[in-house]
Length: 402
Image (cartoon, rainbow, N blue to C red; front, side):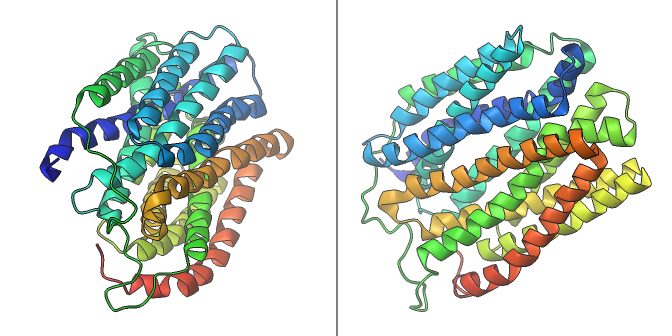
């Protein structure tokens, strides 16, 4: 198939990523609603959020390697979209806590099936097998969809448009469109392991960083970025309402949108930057911005907190796209989905464990002190990561961009 004819296929693969991630964050503004409606504590809300990550991890561990062995990655992606539809409908019609947990688990399993497999498919569908460009497309769609989810739900809350159900009906409908599109559009055959996807040597003849060491740096960077990002996604509205005094649930929910939207724009902006450089710059910004947010809470300064959130989003986006680009470059072509899935396993571990810990800490020592602890983790982790990244990725950073 001519490369130009891959455009519809790439579009529906990107749509699959988008709907899975819409389903990921559409629920974020509703956690505060369910907390008040059913008298739930912070840990329970955090557990509902983290259940999504549990489903994602299970799917990533099983389906990433499976998709590398199948002749057509659509088999996994379409099956995962059915799980996204099921999860959105269960969550959107939940009448008790158990159905919230089930809906989030199914949604997570759907996202896990889409994430690694669709990201690998986007690279294989790219006419030039451009690792950095494909990583930018995948992570930008990923994060912008995460931003759009809270926008849809916050709008439904503000306009009283059945906010507990309508956002998830929208997700289910778009998932069905992606599913039908993937089944009907022409899809090229998988390229062989011998394709020149990721060269074994750089243009100057030097070897890229060892695969394991390069992957470890990328995984560490995404762990830090997602640990911070998941806490903003799950508890961002609580930060704004409980620590800064915002009264409107819809307004508080928009802090998640601010973070995710800025993160998406950052990924597109840093898509033209060498992946190792984006990883390092983004990680440093995350640490500095978290310190700024902690100061804003101490001073009870909402404007300063919003500014810090914007900077966290910039750092998150840069670190995410940089780390994803590094993984795309070090992954062997015949194990690409396995590497990308392992990358997202790390990401979703950091999407669940820190949120659970922060929820427990907030119930024990207060949300403000728990946020300070999160800030301390981010700062110390980045200080450890930066010299290691410089040592491992320095030869890779000299390589011309592809």
